[in-house]
Length: 226
Length: 336
Image (cartoon, rainbow over all chains, first blue to last red; front, side, top):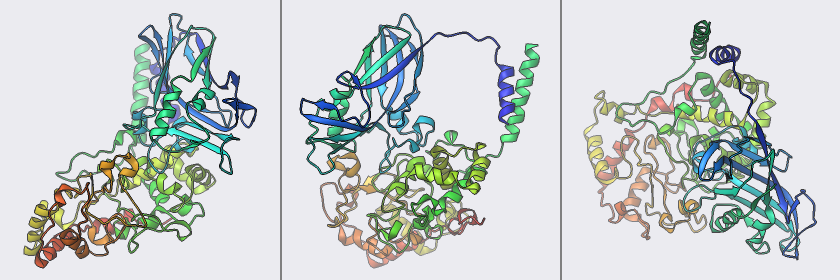
């Protein structure tokens, strides 16, 4: 059946293909400029809080390339899971648009995806990024321990998600960019942690005001290193 | 040459269409609106429905293989958990709510008593993951299914693929649940002029339209909205209902308005199953309304139903029982 369809599509498609030059887009979670290693305890926040990360997972979606304000390329609808825990960091291929001045992407998945029922691939609920007690994807999972947290396990757990007003946690990030063969985007985790006090707010598990503040800190947590 | 190639391709696609035509179409009852569920994203097929039915009745979905969906949603009780105010799940743990009756789900826009779930496809994740219900995870369910030759075969028949995913599992469960349509009660037959109400049922129907239909709107017998129907909050459960999801004080003590179809079989009643009989329910609307800021405007005045009127309304409510639905062999435990 599949084979028949493949033959059919080959018959209907043209033989001509065009070579498209591609650029690799890489996201690297960093802490004060250093690439983060899981289970490494040498990160220090605010000169006093020792931080160790045990899990970092996030979604990037709706990537767009712009020439000033004009969209010149879009992979609208595509969602990429960055699963730092299992080393599944996708290398995203984007076309090398020389006139590109700006890149835009979403941290998380938009509300349309959140109301679309069961989805597959990176959005399959088996990926551990779907809430089960209420509907909705987790846009960012950030877990670890800190010496400054008073609880016995010293754990922090930030599950940032939610899609409906007033707790929509999807954030669109726009960065100036010069096109090159490889674009490395730093996801500056230290900037997110600095936005709230880890000693008092160490668990966010649902869409609420704390999650909102946390999500807003994401807006300033990406930079391009070229 | 190009024309030949085009016709070859076209011909092959037509053949594929014939090979794949195992589709199943849900009949929309007369005078009902179109379903809300988008069947284009999960087209029904006999194989997928059968897979979903197998999953629905299989305790493999729970951590220790003891609880299936059917444990709390039994077909003979309008797909709910009869006799238990609060449904019990894995290790005899008691939940905080009464399991809802399952029917006509293709017309339902939002799920759970507090509307926590926004799509039928993701509904099953809630009981699977709830530590008091099935205590399992979808990741682990998929792994268990992948180790089952029977399921590998059922999934292959349904999806033509050797891999089992969370998406396939959830969509197959939806397929089975979507077929649970109840639209052939005596009430429906009266609407189609195939039967007649007794005098008492007719009186009850008139009273129903006057006192109950603003929330339990025909033909689904629910507006699909949320309402505070004046239940005194249980001091132990401290259930705030819809507000738990929206955080909006206006939603405090609001719960989903349930359908009244097959109500004869879906006792006990209310989100916490506090009433065992329909008579107790009507007594609540007569005398038991607890006043609070979010109380439904339709309940601002107590219903002053006489004993005869209550009996008449119950006589009407019993016409909503659909035995063809309740005892449909296609909906019951699959015989292997």
